[in-house]
Image (cartoon, rainbow, N blue to C red; front, side, top):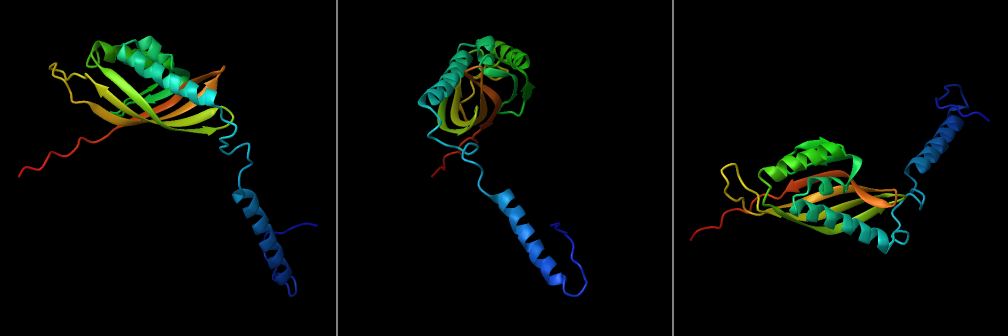
Length: 186
């Protein structure tokens, strides 16, 4: 049986073709919009506490290395082909470029900085990918004249991939929360 996706105008066939078209349209819609197989969807029963702990450890390694101003150790929390975009929109690609970026920052305005990241949520996408939202606080940042910048607070949105048994940052984006409005004077 062949199915034609155009309407025939000959008498008696238009109704039959319209029914076939409706059936084909319904079948295509069911295929395209049906729920994904369970193996593709997030299934918290398949994520392990060990993976969650490993992701949180990668975050701890990241902010501890950052706070110790160790560009190499900071970069090692990233995948070899990672993308990094900071609060100011500066983008770096690849672990070596990310390491060079942090090395320059740790010699400059972040040489006395401290960072704390708190994981808010982890969402797993099997087989070896997760997205993570984390709050971040950076203190000790200096301006060009050496004065201290108030604590910077923001949100990190990270995609992580499990490579060779280790969770690494593959895509890193952070956004700085706006400064609170000045207090109203009475």
